[in-house]
Structures are given as structure tokens and as C-alpha cells.
Length: 115
Length: 114
Image (tube, rainbow over all chains, first blue to last red; front, side, top):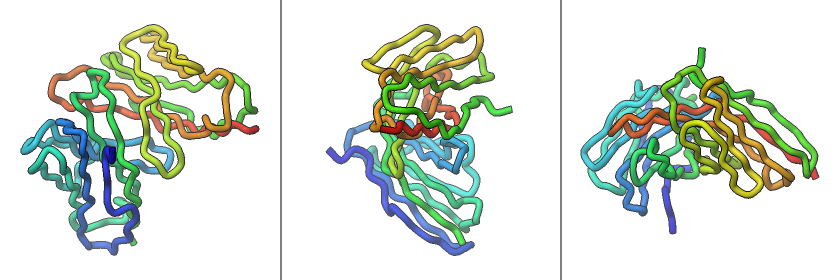
């Protein structure tokens, strides 16, 4: 059972470049999320989706875009990369909203460095 | 002031010790409280979940919530080297269709020495 799969695992970007972090889940979950984790700062929500075709901003959406064309996939797009976007990115999914106590499953993370 | 405060540690204890991990929060609307464990270079995994105030026990782990003090705790009894990880508290309010946005603490790095 693959769960939540993220690619790439590691990436180095130059300032101003763009890239897409891929995320796919095979659990048929409706809810999907993108978080970033900076050292000593916990996880912050970038964007989330409650189903195919529906996305919404989280705490720190600036500089990112998302789309949700299928239940399985939730890619995160970085436009015009900046050093402030150097971070570890986690994709996650849950069957229903997490405030119901439902387990949220995280991917293994994508380490991004912008130089 | 951050919504959720957690001492980042690091915390080092000998094997077999009782570990106490804590978070404080400022938003009295939080109703759902969780503890996640994150091993190095891995994604977080849910360890404990509690709704509102009270205690919850699962094996060697006990989660406590004191809403009057806006304080939550995770206790680990008979700690093992395999418990060495970063522990993140997280909490949320119940807003329908808001994705149940989780607010995370900074995480406490725990090391259990054999």
C-alpha cells in the first residue's frame, strides 16, 4: 500500500526558476493538503483541497499554486522560486476533514533548496 | 504570540524514563488535539488524538488536555530508544469544510539513550 507519494525527494532550484512538486495518494481520500516545515517552526499549511476541482488557501499560500483535477493527484507549483521557499514540503491526505479526528496521512517529504 | 507554543528541546532521557512533552495554546476555540511523531527524514504520523478535555491512554502513551489552562501534554512511560523522534502537537477547531486546518507546534526533539 503506497499511501501518499511525493516526488521529487530532493531538488535544488535557482532563484526565479519554477517547478512542480508532485503528490498522489491511492487511498481514495477526498481531502489533500500541502504543508511546509521550516527548522524549529512546525508545519504550516500552504493549500488544501476538499475534493477534485476545489482548492483553498492555507496560512502561507504566497508564491505557490495548486490544482486538483483528480481525486488522486494534488500538485504544488512554485512560480519564480525565492530563497524563502527553501524548506521541506509535505503532502498529506485524509478521508474526511481532520477536525473530525480522522487520521491525516503524510508523504515522506520533498527537500527543496533555492539558491 | 504564536497560537501554539512548544519547547523545541532537545530533550535527552535515559531508557526507561517517563517523558513529559507539553504545548500551550492561545485560541480557546480549539477542540481537537493531536500528537504526531516524526522520525528523521520522514513525514509525521498520528500518535494520539483527543477531543476536548480529559485523558486518553494508549499503551505507554497518555495524552492529557486541560482546556481551562490551554495546556496539553503527552506522557511516555518506560521510554525506549525507538521513541527517539520529534513530537509535534497539533490542534484544530471544528469548521465544516475548512479542511480542519491543523495548527502545529514547533515540535520537541526527543532522544532516549540506551
